[in-house]
Length: 185
Image 1 (cartoon, rainbow, N blue to C red):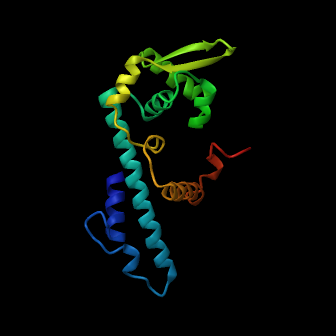
Image 2: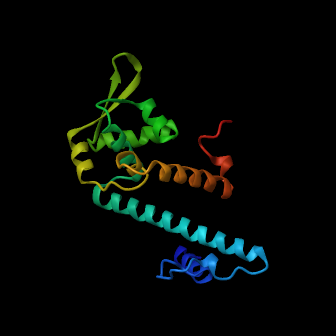
């Protein structure tokens, strides 16, 4: 079943506000059976999630087409722009990712001449990552969208708190807690 069909079917079932319908779907048909109400709420949440997922996918496709980058690589560049040289361990912590995945991303950015990688003079085991002039030029052109936008644009703190709670809830409600990378084993 294609994602387009799923979204379209859900819109029909819940009554899409996307199509200009101003009345929220859960305000329409609350039956005596509260299961129906919950089902409509669940479908509305799924539609919103699918919209977010599709917007992120479209953003990543556009990044790849226009700049030859993935969303992760752009995130690495944005974090590197915050300081002249950043330890690889600090990047790994900021992005909550596996060392091998980050290493591959850094190596590709280095091959593209967007970052430089050198040994930390204070700790020969550590690597420092820095943005090159070409990397800075690319960042000036790249759209400021996606999760990294939260670091660079001022937002209402209460709204950010609500977003964090909603995303934490999503992990739990979607049954993904066992795969949460921040979960302590």
